[in-house]
Length: 181
Image (tube, one colour):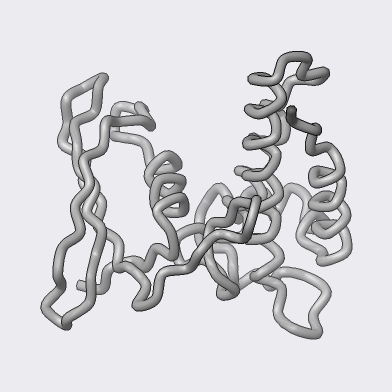
C-alpha cells in the first residue's frame, strides 16, 4: 500500500478535517504516533473515535525524509512542491473559508492575534494553490484537480485558478493582516 505523503503536520490535520466521518462529523480527538515503515521511512499515524457516532478514525501519512521548517514569523503547509494530499480546488476552498471567518475590526489584542493567525493560513493555502501552476503557465491544469470539491470549484469558476488572479487574492489577504500588539 502506498501511503499519502504529508509535508507537515498542519497539512495532515487539514486533510483529516476535510475528510469527515461517515456520520458527517469532521473533528475527532487525535492521538498521534510516529511509526517505522518496512522500507525504512517514517509515517505519522493519527487515530481516535468520532465524538458523534463513536466510529474509529485512523489516518497514516508518510513523513518527508527531511522536515521543512516554517518561515520566520509565518505559517506554511509544505515545501516548494505541490501537495499530494489536497488538490488546488481544496486549497482554494480552504483559503476562502479562512478569509470569510475573519471578523472585521478586531478590536482586542486576542481578536487581532486570532485574525492574524487565520489570515496567515488563508495566505498559506493560496500559496499552495499557486504551487500547482506549472512554470511558464498561466493557470492550474485541469489534471491537477482530483477531488470532487476541487473539480466543482473549477467548473463553477475556472478563472479563479489563473496565476495572476490567485496572486492578487493572496496579496489582498496579506495586506489585510492586522497589526498585533
